[in-house]
Length: 270
Ligand SMILES: NC(=O)c1ccc[n+]([C@@H]2O[C@H](COP(=O)([O-])OP(=O)(O)OC[C@H]3O[C@@H](n4cnc5c(N)ncnc54)[C@H](O)[C@@H]3O)[C@@H](O)[C@H]2O)c1
Image (cartoon, rainbow, N blue to C red; front, side, top):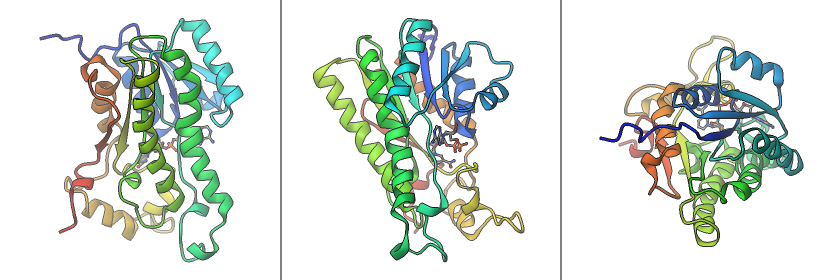
């Protein structure tokens, strides 16, 4: 038995969205498995707060929506660590304007809101960081990218039009980039995604919790009812899949989107 199969010792990981609810749990796990972690952050104060007490983590201030800014971030990481082995594209989110509601019907939806959500989740959340960091990472023989997708990517969820479209694009990009890099640059490189089920976080609180009563909304009740395991996810539920995809234990897994959803995507509802 090779007990170093899941080790990330000696690996440098770059993560976007590392100060978010799911991102913070991922950073802690990456450190636990002995990686050095560079967190791309737009908010140094939040980074310091969230990463308090963690060693082997450093922040790099950059704007994930800007290629120039991300190029500077890559330079900083490479200067400090010599190389980048793993990129976790964790930044993303939704906003009310890109979500249908009684006051935001489909026919009047502002295109800017849809565009912003698609830009954030596809360009900022996957494309730009992959473009910038993979240019360096393909020079190594152990490069791997993990995109963070969503249940909304596989079958559309009601209301979240822009977010679902963007995350569907992330899944497609995951497959495309896996093939493209293998065919053109490096046969050992891997690109995969994790599609988390439903976790209570800031980005979806407005859809899940009735702000007046604090109770689960009918939508949240329906989600739990459609999740065979009967609960929301805990951020720690993502860790096994993350470490597996980052480490050599998944070295022949490529172009896949792995659902971590308590069975949500397996259940037809009948
Ligand atoms: N919470 C869920 O149920 C759920 C489910 C499926 C997928 N996801 C995905 O998981 C990832 C993490 O989400 P989370 O729930 O932890 O959300 P979160 O809001 O707690 O964290 C989102 C992170 O993205 C960063 N971010 C957002 N907009 C940004 C911008 N314009 N520039 C730079 N950084 C920006 C935030 O700073 C934060 O670090 C996202 O990609 C999200 O879409 C979440």
